[in-house]
Length: 347
Image (cartoon, rainbow, N blue to C red; front, side, top):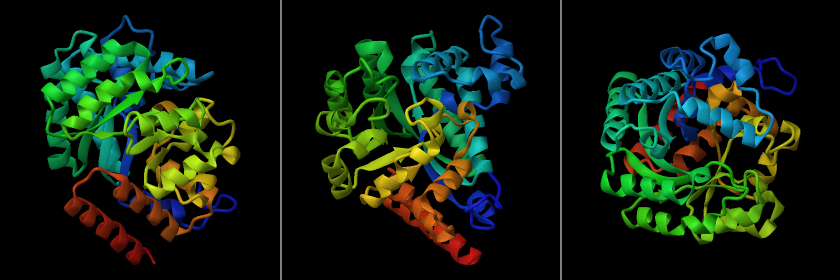
């Protein structure tokens, strides 16, 4: 999308590229760039993932959400030792730095690695080592959301809760639930979220992406959700929208992802505007950016078009992400001030 596209504010893409940003809904393995995926596939020749970066574009074309999960898990299978984990994590941070992402809460699924033989402590040490290096070398602050892969059942929930509570790494701030929603009811995960919340972790489950608003209600009422991953079906329930707005429960919106996984048919039909008009705190995110041929800058550009925003409006979206983040109060103040200073200089 270019600055001269119909309905676009001239120079807005340039503004977005330089805008300091936070990202709250982006997956660890799903952020692996084609270069890194190809490198890992070349190291692990028994994988069905192409080692040719050009072939990955076709491989990452999804028929539906179930196919997306299948492809995603094939990439997960490329992460087989602590060195793979560390490499992936630092390279994800490098890609974030290029987009002026200052702070990110990266959704990490420890079970996917420990279930494939990586020792839990080695996994935690690898992500922590990469986190510290990313902050010191790249200026990107990373925090973790440990995520239950819902399709793997309660065994994965138990393992994720155990690692979170027993090994709790310094960067861990939240506890999540991902994977398919259909056939994976939220109530069964309540005991695991209770354990995570008891040690101070925030609750950020996916909900209402491929199911109706009742899944979002379950996430709020049973899992104590403080933010909702996606939540696109929330617009089907006016009472739910009112509740989200009143309690400042943010929605982590990922427009391109919703189209790629067929959760929403077209961008023109995306419910983003309805969410904003209802007063819901909305954040813009990229989800699994290389898999969807996007990045956070592009998602901001799409949101600006859908909402008819100028530079000040886009900066407002960036500040929404800071508000909804689990960054500490001084950190929020610094990043908000940086966004304001950048916007003032732009004007």
